[in-house]
Amino acid sequence: MRNDERMKRRIARAKRADAAMTGVFYSVGGFFLLLLIVLAGYIITKGVLDFYPELLSFTRQGIGNQFFNTVYLVFLSLVISVPLGAAAGVYMAEYARPGKVTTFLRICIESLSSLPSIVVGLFGYLVFILMTGAKWNLMAGALAVSILSLPLITTTTEDALRSLPKGYKEGSMSLGATHWRTITKVMLPACLPRIITGVILAAGRGFGEAAALLYTAGQSTNINWSNWDITSPTCPLNPFRPGETLALHIWVMRTEGSLNPNSAAIANFSSAVLIIMVLGFSLLARMLTRRLNKKQGGLK
Amino acid sequence: MLGKNRFGRALVTACGLFIILLTVSIGTFLIIKGTGTFTKYHHTVWEFLFSADWAPLDTPGEGGGQVGAAIYICGSLLTCGLALLFVTPFCIAAAIFMTEISPKAGAKLLQPAVEIFVGIPSVVYGWIGLTVLVPFIRDVFHAKMGGYSVLAASIVLAVMIFPTITTVAADAIRGVPMDFRKAAYGLGSTRWQVISRVVVPAASQGIFTGVILGLARAFGEALAVAMVIGKTRAFPKGLLWPTNNLTAAIAADMGNSSNGGEQNLALWTMALLLFLISMLFIFLIHRVAKAGEKKHA
Image (cartoon, rainbow over all chains, first blue to last red; front, top):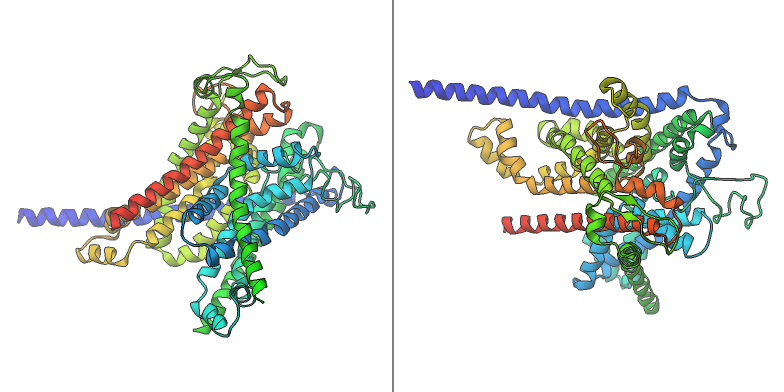
């Protein structure tokens, strides 16, 4: 009888512990959700509250130039990293034979993806600025960001190709297409949505990158919007001019805050714009994934 | 036709090799620049790692200053360690919530939230830390140096690495075979018993990998930490005291140092150290994965 009592108590204790821990887990989950909502809400409302019309202008008081630089820099970096990364991904998925070189390449991709962005920034500073003798420029920044997004695009492409049903490749090859034609005309188009999702994620990362741009793209910008001579250092489209981005602008506003009376408002608004862009991009990536899942589900 | 086939193959192979070339050249440049402190200015590795005297000269070719980076190294270790300590239990709890307790809410609410957390730029985290956390610490704890502190830096880092650890841990927990749970429930365990005695131990390797990945991210983070750590060249006397760390020092001083000077090369040595540490993390992850394979075989 005493053993029964003890057992009952043990069971009751286990049940109580279970209920308590369930409560803990719910509160942790809820806490993080709340944290995100509060964080995003705070950033956006603060940016909106501090808004004044000049913020949208392309002057020192506005962030128009920085916004343009950000978009342009991310565009340039994608132009470089997407073809390179996708090609390397194709190599990894289709051509690489198991062996020392492939293992080493895999380690390289992994190392690249875990490199601190400030280290990549320093490498960019050394190679693209000091060794070429150039001033801070957008191109150097774009190259540095490319190094950061390259591993992401490579692994996304490789995973997408590998997860494609075997039938795609076999069907095309058995019709007499060469391996290369199969890749470019059948396999890559079939996994394009997944690759695009990866590219969107890479772009989102590029928008927020700052440490790698500190010593490559530079911490100032000077654009003359009526100057369309592409070789001129103030032409908006010249990739070899200094081009401070939005994320870097927040950093600069903090360090040079005393020089600009509106620095807090500018940083707040820049943060809000960055957050909205990030939210938009992750929404876009989600929508693409969902549509893709539906499409593939429909085939079954 | 076949020519194109061969050309395509050569093209993608070249791109693959380019990645190797890129990684190797990053490593090589860092090693060449980073070892300058020891070869050109004849400092010892011991001095760099363990001395707290930091007074390098900034004239190219002129040595004789001190390059002890112990304060920066200590700052990095301390903030990252504390961040991990704060956030790891929360991450594991969140991962368990997403996978075991409420997979539906996890997939619909928490997973997207975590993805958004990942996307928030680190500068924005730093800015929030600067405008909210630093004044908060100043007013509530009456910190001496205006709230710039080890505590602020650790909290910012903790929020930043939360999504990394949670995502990897959740994947690891999802990977635990269903049979494990069935067997444990069949023996009459409560859900908490199944989670704490079966699922989490079985997923411990994956969770550990997540922790290392989070640590790697925290170690490499520069600007967010630089904004809140205070950047004073002294060991912190407590959680509420400011200090400095490797990445913040590089970010702040690299632009003002003349190329090839003692200070410049010492900063490169710090970058090399960061590179070596991130290599060490990768090595650790592989070791953990290998140990896991052995255990299951």
